[in-house]
Amino acid sequence: MKYPVLFLFCLLAWRTAAVPLPVIFDTDMDSDVDDVAALAQLHVMADRGEVELLAVMVSGRNEWSAPCIDAINTFYGRPDLPIGLISGDRGIRQHSNYARQVAEAFPQDFRAKHEQIESAVLYRRLLAARPERSVVIVSVGDMTNLAALLDSKPDAHSPFDGGALVAAKVAHYVCMGSRYPAETDPGNGKWGNFRTDPVSTREVVERWPTMLTFTGGGAFADSMAIGREIAKLDPKVWPVSLAYRSYFGESKVGSVRHTADSIAVLVAVRGFAPWFKVVDRGSNHIDEIGRNAWREEPDVPNQRYTSELNNPGDARKVAALLELLAMTPPKSGLPAGQK
Image (cartoon, rainbow, N blue to C red; front, side, top):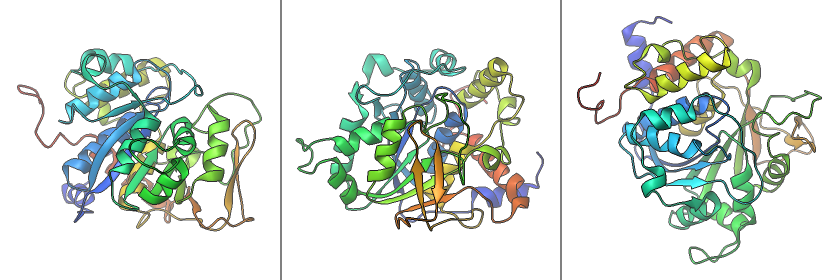
């Protein structure tokens, strides 16, 4: 993927925020590798002043997910960023082709030094401390933690229950999931972000009180696939490169991977323009196994989705932007002696 230097510079310089956007990132960080690129992109946006990254939540039960996240956070100069563990009794453990590899290859001290806290508790603490309607949540994994947040009770951090706390403090929730206008797979497999914990998915979609934007996967995200250039980076230096190389090597999916999670991050931080088409009439309906279907009626004002480019010809441009963000070095530079 080759582009003129000026074009790439313009992509990176596209948005400069006057005030960083407070973001909480909720990820499974296990079965697919696009979570890694999405977290890397958030760190780069934080380095550029677009984002204030408040925490990363883990929505799955793979024991290497949180240490992998901590290794990525440490690489980008945020070793003490809070990490929340999966909340409650729901959720599943999925295999990862990269999480353990990254956690063992790069500096991290999650088990040794980090607070071991459930995500719903950490959400409450963070939200209670923020101004009204200020926080953006991006989920690119299961919705287990968010259902637990909605079900949470008043505590020392806030007199509000979970639903009221979200309504008071969250400005926007961007949810990666699933395929639009409908996901029609008849099987009962627990894959994607909605079908792994369908009970939590239904609860969140039905009860979320603020603006909720869904971003799609499938052919939409496949059209903006990345990874070929990321994998060329030194995997001894770059955790994102090791993750992609490990994933490609074990999963045998080829040399690029969809950008479903990265698209959710881009929409959350930079909005829809100029790339993405928005459907803002209708509502998302989730069946008992977690399949979704968008219906025009009833029209729920706080639900919308994007799963289409305004111009399909822009797919390679968006992919270039996303890959370049994931390949941008930390603001403090690469570790000493590495390049």
